[in-house]
Length: 131
Image (cartoon, rainbow, N blue to C red):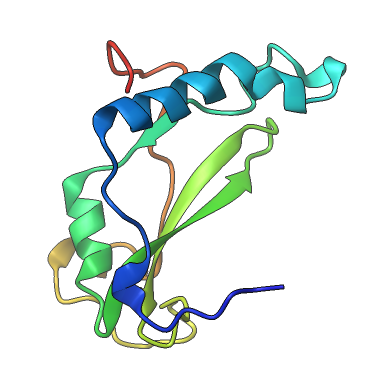
């Protein structure tokens, strides 16, 4: 059952870096155990995915945007991919078929509106050391 969100500003919180490191370290160490054996060691679950500031700012520039939502998708190699979209104060995604106005920035106008994907995926392009 979904929980109602009354205050958009209460979504998310800053956490100490040590807590973030513990969460990401646990994920890196344990991520393979949630997969069926035939899918292990195929890098299906990313450690992280990086996106440009311009793309993030473009999403934030959509009329009515109050936040960024993160979706998990899957490409044709079965790799989990991160998809970002803006959402409004009604907690609805701001998508091109929902809103005809594109964000004010030139980057957003080149995106066909709505979503960002195809970030730099780790493994392959990883920070050293990762969080």
